[in-house]
Amino acid sequence: MSKTVIDRRWLPLNALRAFEGVARHSSFTAAANALLISQSALSRHVIALEKLIGTQLFERRPHSLVLTKAGQHLLPAVAKSFDRLEYALDDIRKEGAGSLRRLRVQMPPSFAVHLAVPILRDFRRASADVEIDLVSPYGVGPPPGDIDVAVVYSRPTVSDLVTDLLWPVRLAVLCHPDIAARCAGASLSEFIEANELVHVRIADLPRHHCWSQFVRQTGRGGLNVERGLVFDTAVLAVQYALSGEGIALVDNYLFADYVRTGRLVQPFEDTLDDGYGYYLTTHPEALSDTAIALFRSWLIERFGTSPASSPAGLHLAVSNE
Image (cartoon, rainbow, N blue to C red; front, top):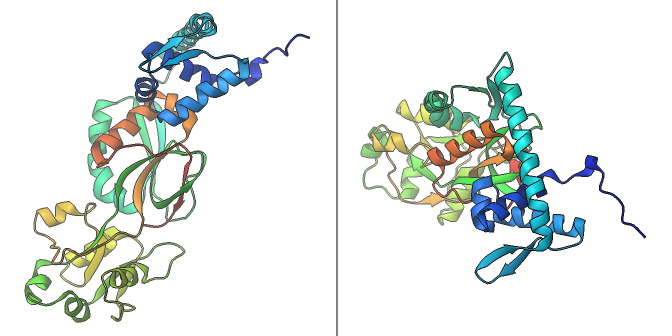
């Protein structure tokens, strides 16, 4: 009995691209780096392709990969097909009336205002043919389907998105230098009790969540932190602290420039790690888009303190930041 013919409607294009990359580099690690995808996701693509055709494509030796007879047969067809597609798309793009590529990007307000927007000109200078359509919503949930690249402030949970941790958030007490000088010598408990508290609202959590977690984690759970002003974003909370009033509990990396220049001070070393971080998210199928790959790499280079990718499959329960 003959096997069912593979219908072109179901051709596994991502898996074929993964196979070609591994064959070209003779390495899953090198291919994953070149294709901007996690090694585990790349392996899954190749394994799925081998299951589809019913035979191995690589002979996996201790220190090398070698194409099997089936792999040697498939590679030229795949490489030539992708070459032809690439040439055709490039020709059409060059002949088209408009050469600009527009990316729809989502970022949390504080990240966008304080870090990204001031330096977007650098990306535009390096990639003048890529336009940015930036949105900065306050809602919860993963980025909508029309977003090409998103930075989210969140805790990680599982989904199909490819994610890169830009940095884990550490919340620290920041205040105006005059407040720190006025309370010099005070303990942390005395300092909190003596000053107005500035809160940052996080969607679906109590208004005073961060300060409540902070005093509990630092062993000062008896303090009253259900007082003071509440702001929708960290950048608004910091603007209030810059005016000389209140003490804010905000990410010390996000606002490190204010501490470095002396506009704000961090009078205590205590920090809160409640599991949140800034993550870069992309749909797996979008990684083959040159413009998306360029912008993603630029964000990781600029803001990633530990730019190792999480497994593809990390979904983020997004909150206001």
